[in-house]
Length: 325
Image 1 (spheres, one colour):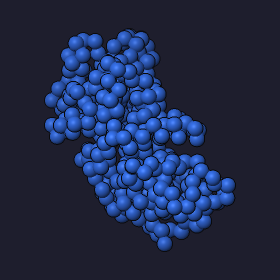
Image 2 (cartoon, helix red, strand yellow):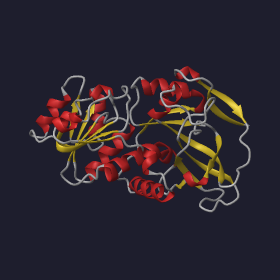
Image 3 (cartoon, one colour):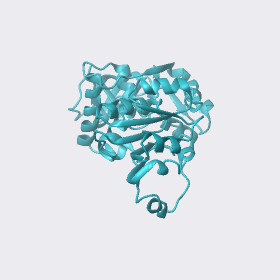
Image 4 (tube, helix red, strand yellow):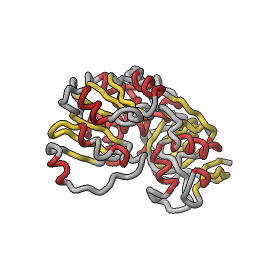
């Protein structure tokens, strides 16, 4: 008998419940996957709370990211085989010991990458890839600002951007997170609990400000993020951990220097099989060659999913968080 976390009604972390379930056999194009490690991400709390509606309605099993071993394949599956180690950042349902999933979402895990590393890095790592390599293609000597530098995406993006020769500034909330960010590629750290990040960014850059600001925080850092950009700089809003951005007049972008602004999502950048394999392939190669060190600082049992969410929303986590079936 398999087990999975179910959300029967949206709300706080207490709505996450472990239940026994029957998975069944894979249909055409599907794979039966036994999970070995499951990634926990902030977007999971959006679905749980109802901020993002579940595409499957209620009840549903949250989670978009995991690694595991293929137990069985359905008719027409050619890309993956029984016994193969695979990972994904795909449709809801990852908070489970076993699941059915379409094979098109799965990516082979390289030999030099562990299941835990893959589960911890698929969503956050591919997010770092599209932010750095596609949304705004960071070049050597670019000035980059990333909010929440000690978070899962932040630690990856800092290392990767530094390897590209960028000047990377990170904001954090306390000295411990500042040290962690410093160890992961950030040349400049701003503790926003004690400093004005807009003024410090201008000071650090000698008044020139940044080519790009990556903002997954949302309400608490807006419109300050815009004020950290040089003329024609790019504001990349890819999350809202402190709440959604307020509505604003696009004329504000003109007033602040003909700025660009975008609200990207991972699934738009991995919409085709070709795009998914390219994004995941480059990212996993960076893990395999140790350009990206994966920082897994929290591990919870699958049954402890609610505790993982409390820790995540309480900003008590750094790096990646895993559920282990």
